[in-house]
Length: 260
Image 1: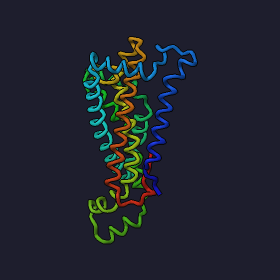
Image 2: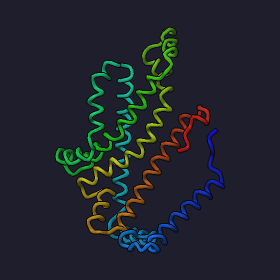
Image 3: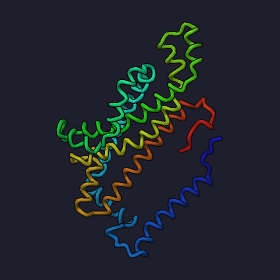
Image 4: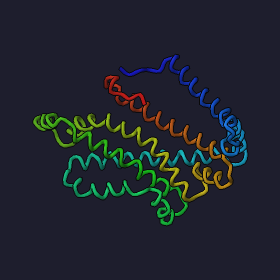
């Protein structure tokens, strides 16, 4: 059975967070670590307030969020469509799989400067890098889900004179949804990484730019503040996928849902 959040689990989770914040604030000074190397929560909050007045962090947050949403939608759609095509056309998979695998293995950091040269200092290189990262886990999950289906179900549908579209809509599509959402959970976190990698390379907007800016100034508190903001965005993206999954897969037994 799937465990649900209760008041006790919420209190325990908040207690863990409080212990972490307290250790973050008091442990580094006790160990002799200077504040400019490991700023505490108070220093990070003060830096965030300063950024709010001078660095326009909400503008950068909005740009990064837009890039994450667009790249997630494009990457997940491409991954699902291509995964389905490769699953139903094995010969096409044999032809294209080495190139898809090579594209996945190649370091995305190496692509980012090239994309900036080709597309300029715009949002497009960042989105393309994130799409390349999001695409693969979705494709693999959909491909594996269709390949692992019971072939008798498809044979039964064909025996009932179902068309190819009807087989997909009534048999294959519902069967792939659990695996698809598992891939979407992974992709929602990887998408944040992909966008930040793209922002590291070029441009003057986005939280990735603020990270590089803070690092260049030696402002560790600023780096920590931006990292916390990115973490919150990643958690919200993951939570959004979980909420949609709970709505779409409400018919499944609770044991088939994932809590994390």
